[in-house]
Image (cartoon, rainbow, N blue to C red; front, top):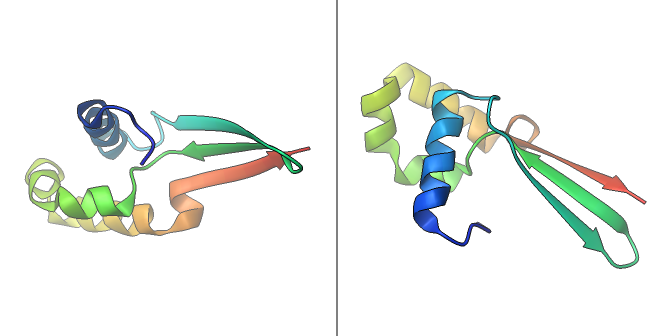
Length: 85
């Protein structure tokens, strides 16, 4: 995880869980010899979802937690990376 402050990352990830798709974290990285990678993440990492299972289940319920965890674990649903040369 590339967030400098864990409490800030936790707040962002919680918002991503509560309103999926409304908060997207974007990182732009120039890579020598390749171009510029742009990575967009609309859901928190599955590791974060797993570590916060009890709290998330209490807030969103078991069924929604299961859907959220599945989406966070599916790379094509959780984030998108593009390369611009």
